[in-house]
Length: 157
Image (cartoon, rainbow, N blue to C red):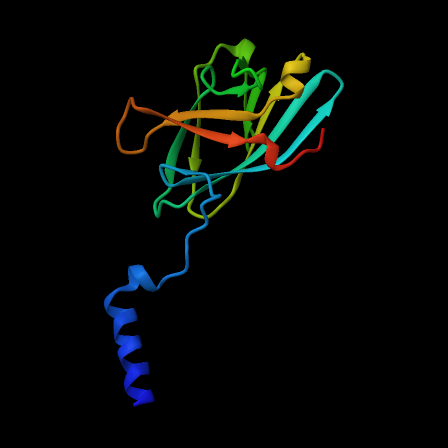
């Protein structure tokens, strides 16, 4: 009888895998098959540096097109602050370059470092609560998606 119940449980697990899996981690920040994670927040002099990781879950390499002017730091009063520079791996775009987009090729399961810099650092910027990343959707050209990364996860200021 015990073997029959074990066999029945095994068959149910195979027939209904959706109900037999472990619960998903709801703290993951995944938008359009890209996971964003906060690495660190550092303040040196009058510059705030936010380091993030982006990991693509897409099987094929995909173009990641970051909108530099729309990506911003959001303070406690919900005001957005434009970044001084954005760096993905070795590609850097300064705000003074007036480049709208930063293009980068993401590969599956290879984390890429994203470094956001804001200067000069005011009290509002120092107490920022989140980062808004704006990028082009993979399937729909021209549609931009937003990912919000909570900066209260790690406090190193």
